[in-house]
Figure (cartoon, rainbow, N blue to C red):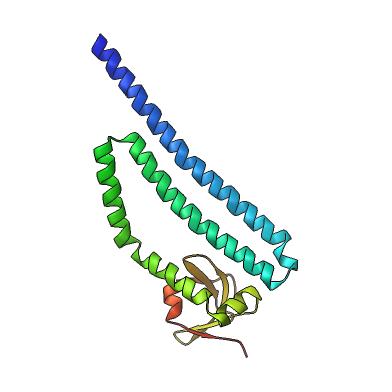
Amino acid sequence: MGIGTSLLGDMQSSSLMVVVAANLVVLIHLIAGATETFVSEMSRHTVASDSPTVRRDYEATRLRLEVFWTIALIATTALAIKMVLPADLADQLIAAWFVGQGFALQPYVQSFISGISLRNNSRVWARIFNEAPITIFQDDKKYILIAHSVFSVTLKAPEERGDAVRVLSWRKLTECTIGMPH
């Protein structure tokens, strides 16, 4: 009887840790979503009528928050794994996870770094924040840059009808010809 009670107590403790860890990850997702919503609402009210400097500050804030929440989610997931699993197993899983991420995320890291380089290009930076169109030529086809994030850019072909868009990584964008409209 004592063994059964002990096993039940261990199972309740383990189940509680799983629930706590899952709630921790969900909480981080909710906070990240709330800050993203707040910043996008801020852009609608403030940036639409203000100077390019304000727009640049908004975009810089948005990109920094995106990077911060990506790192926070990774750290929270690692913490949740350590809370739920035995220490040795958790350490091995986290180490394997980070090694796997190193290989799997390599294109994203390259795109992120290429994005930093391109966003700091004075021609591209000025056009993004002055909301002037940036023309991108890829495979003899003309596109207009309509949005960007930390990892990618969204392009639209002006000749096409409808909402057809193309998403490229910043790294792929470095292989394109960036021109300004005439």
